[in-house]
Length: 487
Ligand code: NAD
Image 1 (cartoon, rainbow, N blue to C red):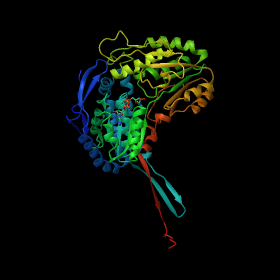
Image 2: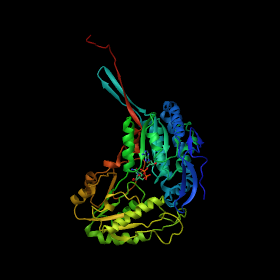
Image 3: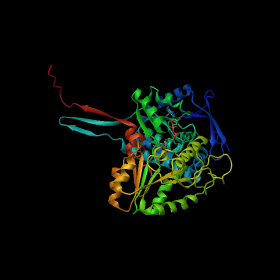
Image 4: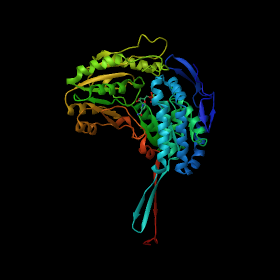
C-alpha cells in the first residue's frame, strides 16, 4: 500500500521538496507498513512558506467577502465529490475505520468551508457608534499570516477547521500537520487551489516539535492556532507571548460524563461508548470519567460490557470494522501502561485491557477497555489517556458529583444524561467546561463554538466565534466639526 504524495510540502500553489529536511516516515497503523516518506521543513522551507503567505494575503483581504466565500464554498463541493478518496487517505493516515472517516472527517472539513464561505459576507460586519455630532465605526480586519499546528487524531478536519475561518476572514495560512499524519492536509491545499484560491494563501509544511517553534517564533506570523496536548500548549503559548501573537489553544481533557439514575440508560451507554471508543478513543473531548449514579450501576455496567464486547475490531478499510488500531506503536504503549496502572491501583477491569489476539500483523490494535470502581485519585481518573479506556466512577448526589467532576485542571467538555429537564440545565450550568452536552455526547457541528476552559485552552473553533479569533477590531472616530483646542 502506498500513499506517497508528489512532494512533502505545498507552498505557493505547488508541491515543493527539500531533501535536506529530516525524514518523516508515514506508517499505516493497521500494518506498520511505510506508506510514504517525507521530509521535515528546513528553515529555508519555513521562510518560503511564510513569504508566500505574506505576499498573497493583502490582495485576498481586499476581495469582497462574497468573492472569498465563493471559493471556499467551491472547495467544500470538491471535498464532498472526493469524499471516498479523502476518507481512504484519512484512514491510511490515522488507522481510523473507513466507516468513521467516510461520515466524519472530510465531511466535517467540507462543512467548515461551506459554513465560513456562507457566513462571511455578513459575519465580519462592524458597527456604527453615534457620539452626538461625531460618530465612530468599527471594522473587523484580518490578522495577516496565521499558523495552524495540528494533532494526529483528526488531520483533515483540523486542517479545515483552522484554514476555513482564517481564509474567510482574509488571512493567509501556513499549516503544519502532525508528523504522525502528514498526508491529508496536502490534499486540502490541492483542493483549495482547484477551487480557485489564489496561490500562497494556504500552504502546508511538514515537521515535528523542532519545526513548530520556527513557525511560532517567526516575526511575520500574527497568530498561532494549535491543536495538541497541554504541555505543548504551554510551550507554544509562552513562545507566542514573547512577541504578543494572537493564539488559539485547543488542548487536552479529562472530561466528565454524568449519568443520573433517571436517564435513558441505553442512550447513556451509547453516549459513553461514542465518547470513549470513537476514533479508538483518540478524541480530545471524550467523556473519559463516566460518573454513574449508584442505583443503576449494575445494569449500566452489564449492558455496557455486552455492547463493548460486540465491537468489531479489524481492518480499517473494511466497512464492517468499527474499531481500528491506535495511531502509533508509542501511543498504544502509553495507553497499555495506563491500563497497567489502573489494574495496579485497584480499579476493576470489566472488559478489554490488552491487545486483541484475533487481529494479526504489526498493527497497533488495542481492546476497548472499561474499568469500574475507579476512584478520583487514581492515575487513570486524573490523566488524559487518549485511547479507548473508559473509567466508570460511582456517585450518589448531584452536589457531590459536580464537585468531583470539576476537580480537575482540565475543562474541555462535559456531559449529563438525565430525564429531568431542569437538572440537565442546572448541572450543565455548574460544570466547568467549554462545551457541554445534555442527553448526547461529542457532537461538534460547525455551527456551534468548540473549545476549552481552564488548562484545556482558550479561543474557540467553529461558529461565528472563530471569525473573531482570526480578525481584530479597528475603530475609526470621525470628527464632524472644528477641533476645539485650549491652546
Ligand atoms: P502534541 O502536543 O504532541 O503535538 C501537537 C502538534 O504540536 C504536532 O503537530 C507537533 O508536531 C507540534 N509540536 C510539538 N511540540 C511543539 C513545539 N514546542 N512548538 C510548536 N509545535 C509543537 O499532541 P498530539 O499527540 O499530536 O495530539 C494529542 C493531543 O492533542 C491530546 O492531548 C489531545 O487531547 C489534543 N487534542 C485536542 C483537540 C481539541 O480540539 N481540543 C483536538 C484533538 C487533539
